[in-house]
Length: 202
Image (cartoon, rainbow, N blue to C red; front, side, top):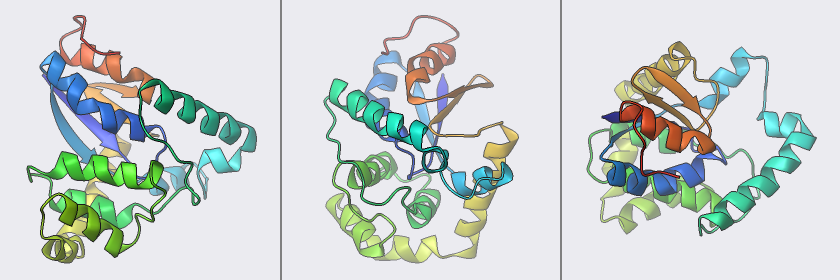
């Protein structure tokens, strides 16, 4: 009973999913596998050079109001970021380098909060160092590992794998070979991971 959680740090709707996922999955008895990838290359495959929420202003206007409602409904802090989408490349590389670290989920959630709750520039190494230090992690070595060729190749492979799975946006969940897209499909993905049984998720 494993759920693959495919996330991109610049994605608005992934923030509430990341913030709630561990509690919901634990209540259902589902193990989460955290899968970073980059949406930019996938968007470029579709001929987009920006987020569709920027390319289509009416859609973007709706999204900002909707995410605010979603966060309010779940009691999550929310601040519309002054830059959107933010560059999550370095954070994603750290997540790839730390794929088996016990603190990885805490790091992921903290990066999303930095972006969407506190409007911090997550592309900056100092911000990521501050997050790591706040988790009791020596961040310097992880920043170095993020620049390793093996780490960069791993992130490219992750994005290629996302393409192969048919992922076109974030958040995406894969359970039992089925793809679910969107924060509002988290409960359905948990249920599928349980074999189609009712899950304790909302």
